Image (tube, rainbow, N blue to C red; front, side, top):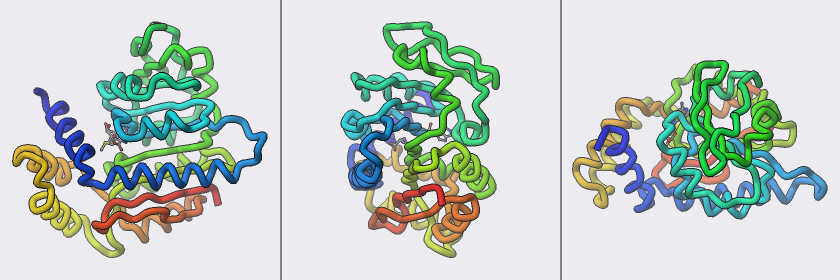
Length: 273
Ligand SMILES: C[S@@+](CC[C@H](N)C(=O)[O-])C[C@H]1O[C@@H](n2cnc3c(N)ncnc32)[C@H](O)[C@@H]1O
């Protein structure tokens, strides 16, 4: 088992046992999307959705299958999760596109990427080189319209538990870029771990690691250690108050729609101000 497989199986165990309240996050996401959809004029076009750091969609697929989307794009920097996500989601009546890429690059790159070619009509298209040197993969249904999806403003932007890997400057850049890519009446649902106001990263990591050690009995000792190692190496959760100010400066209106019970997990709903 390689490092990714070990880390992914630890993450799967976390999701399965709801240790990060993924089920509540999914319910809150569904509620926020229903509210947003209900406010749209009846004759609006079916919304496009982009999911940054989509993972394997193990939890979100049932919600996505119910949504009246025009298109769905799942983007993740780990190519290995994309076929899993595609399998979890299919079949849906809207076009899907699967991109291997970086979410910060997505937010800051204007629509110059080439559309995917219809390389494999049975499933995932073969990865192909794009003009920016990254790889893209697309389901057959999306290939005819790939260019349009890359170029068009996004109606629903979603990201769960991925943006906290960016540092503070990168998060600010991400929020500015994403603001340029959202449609005027669009919505950005950001589920993630956040620090308490004024709490520093070291204190956050300490109390989160303590939570893993003392409460996450469903994990093996090895899995718990993977999680703690991952936290210390990669996680840079934003301070709740300052990230809201950063988002507002970037032109977003910010609303907390759900807060978990551990002063960490939360869902923010951002709309163009
Ligand atoms: C903790 S998992 C969350 C997966 C899924 N969104 C969920 O809620 O279950 C984080 C995912 O984000 C991806 N990811 C992390 N940083 C990323 C980045 N900078 N660009 C694209 N994907 C990223 C990882 O590969 C991983 O699949």
